[in-house]
Length: 296
Image 1 (cartoon, rainbow, N blue to C red):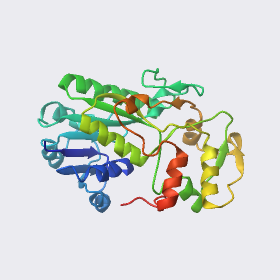
Image 2: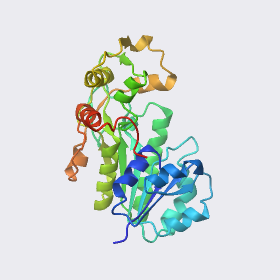
Image 3: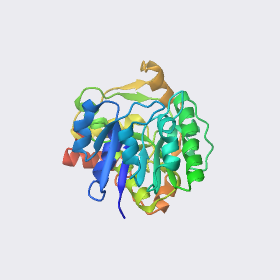
Image 4: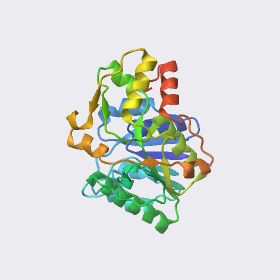
């Protein structure tokens, strides 16, 4: 079967997915807000297209979508709603005859604060931030579109993303690492390779439904920095109390939610985590030096 992928929002995660798929795909298209980024997409195996949202879908994208078999959406909604749906709902619903699967990259932020308790895909969504409330609405809209069209839609709820160039090792090297301590606070994380691996796995199987794409080890953020410092053989930065950290409003909002996110549903499909926890990931990135920068 021909496999033509299209990624709305070919950013950090989208480019990783393209590198995962390039050997098996007959073509991969993807969008960027500016074609100044075209070279970066092309190095990841993506044919670039400009897309900034709006009500009209560029004709070049509409033409590619008419042949697309697997659609991935990695653009965040805003106050006006989901920009991809705004521009492409009619196209997805009636002008994509080859379409077999849709993947929507969301966030575990939709669960809100659960006081450190475990959550899974059946847990209530009680988003705190406006951006997470917008995500809940966008998830629902994509799932509804899937029901209307009979196309399986997989919603991938991602934890805190890290990987090449975006990790505690890189932050330490750049002098930007901080050990902010809020008692009882834990976060899950997900290496970008596992986002790519999980999305490709679900696409191949044409799985629909909601999946937490997250690691096995929710942990305090200061522990991650301390572990990275041990790997590098340097002194970790001093701990700073959350109240004294001077975080931005957005930074504080992340600390306003505490939960442990389970990934059993994803594993039940046969996917096995490449980086099951931050220690394994940092060990691997330190050994092969992939912590320094993204491949493309």
